[in-house]
Length: 117
Length: 117
DNA sequence: CTAAGACCTCACGTCGGCGTCAGGGGCAAG
DNA sequence: CTTGCCCCTGACGCCGACGTGAGGTCTTAG
Image (cartoon, rainbow over all chains, first blue to last red; front, side, top):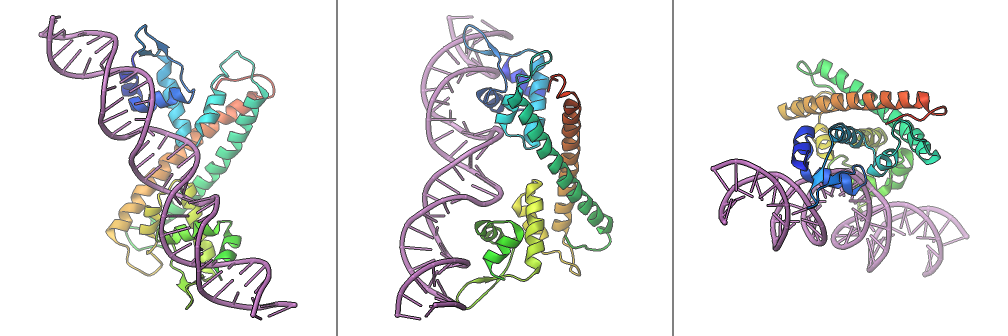
């Protein structure tokens, strides 16, 4: 598929997809004339990349993990990135959970009475 | 307390605290010579502001919520902000939880074998 | 063959949350 | 009184994840 189709399938913009490639997150083939050609897998890859980005992953961390596909060896650096990011995401998860709880208790009062935030 | 003490008590930098004021998130008193004076409450306020910012709240949303303190009326706009941000944080919570789970399953394999991300 | 799209590569603009000077004022201790 | 530290107001810098042209090329429908 070409870039426009991939964009449509993922909800990303064309510019964003080119940006992901620039950051080493995607490696599409090229036609003789230079147009990018993506496999079907790219859809899931882009969706996953966007999930990670939304969750605060720096694109460099994603790029480092990018090469660990099924049967390959995992490098110590990749292992470090995984531990590091896991810790970060665990902390973020707890923070979000706390904030969400606080909002829910606020919502329990809204509709009737105001509540301080 | 003065700004340096507040910074020490909250882990924020002096610059950050001045920035929060610039965005309407804090309203310290001033001495005759212009120095900022904070009450004890400011510590919790700053901590809460930073929690919200870490959780992806735009500072303008925080500013809009800032005025709804205990006994006051809540405006429709504030109500809207609360619902809106609650939806956002709920979505983010689910996304983070999913990513965390994915990482945990990866971690279950690391140390022994590589696992795709 | 031609015209409309879709695509290409630079390359500068934007936005939020501060960092980081520059240049100057306030204040408690010795 | 002066030394040293904290404080003040601008104002520019930075970084990441794109947006937004400009100016040219490719592809495909008619």
